[in-house]
Image (tube, rainbow over all chains, first blue to last red; front, side, top):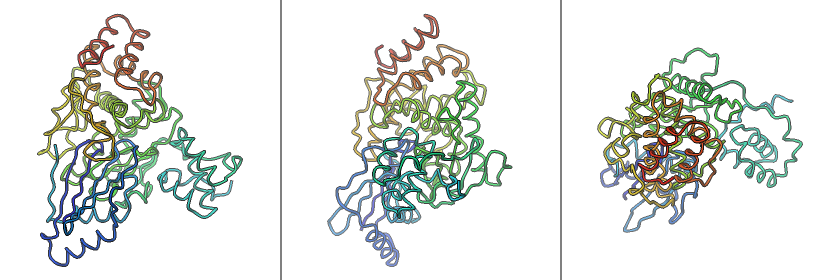
Length: 102
Length: 357
């Protein structure tokens, strides 16, 4: 399972990509990631609302698992709590990759 | 008025209140509608309040005699708990002593400097021109790489150390001025936060954010660095978030254009890569126009160029205004207020970035 968090907007307007692949994790941590993803119940095709508040952070969360990919977008104002917990857990993992996109 | 009706939670996040107003018990619904309508920050959002009143059947007379928080500013600690706990725990109000927490004091002082700037340069009493209490929350969420205006208050993250330096966002006075100016724009021109009108909204926040800093430092237009958020990014990424004098040079990968021929057309589709239709990208074009006008007019930028842009924002622009409308408005204001040399400086500045006026 691979989870990708793309963040953009915000005061900087910069796009960042954070990725965590469960193959890089120990079995227990991979199981935790899987539980977070299941709890977050990402749905395909949903979109962030068309308007944002100024400098709102925009999110795109993608999960690739067993040949399937699910992508969903949010902004800081409507990010569900279970997705926020998933993102924070990924941010806390030393195995994650992080980069600024052009 | 019973104590329970005192308005202690007026800065609770509008989305939480909206949820309560539609989904809560009858008492919660009434309290939420009352709070929403009491919020000074939501005065301009009467349609939202009107809709909620219709949905929840709270009679208009019950909304009379509302209280709002007093004082110039309050800083709260979100304690890393995120949106559902905004604003957080109150840590410093007007007459309180300095906190042991640097972020609290920086947010407090930055809001005070911004208030003073608007008061002294433009005789404006707070972001809504009616003395609205400036509310800030620090330590939002965990390692959060952003600062934003949520329609009612300022919110600051600590930074992750990967994008923003830890603790840097409250240290940058122009960032604080930028966020509060989003409030000013909300209460005046109301520029939509999308595509070119959104870039104009961003431009206004950069202009007055930079002027708050220049005013505080006593700098002339020639002395100013014209950077936004200098020193907030981790050094490996770049020196600042934006350069008003040389758009596109603030950090590695900075996509800001300095001329209309390089305008970046992006959809406003919720994709984080598209930045609400390039609002932080195309703001480079009017940003450079302001820099050119301010340096040509000379002296302190808040004394000549600033008042032209302030009149434009507060008296001339509309929610759907674009760069050409801003250019025309600024030339109109300069014509009304100053002489031929000033009008030429403003017109030339817009021409140089490819906006005809």
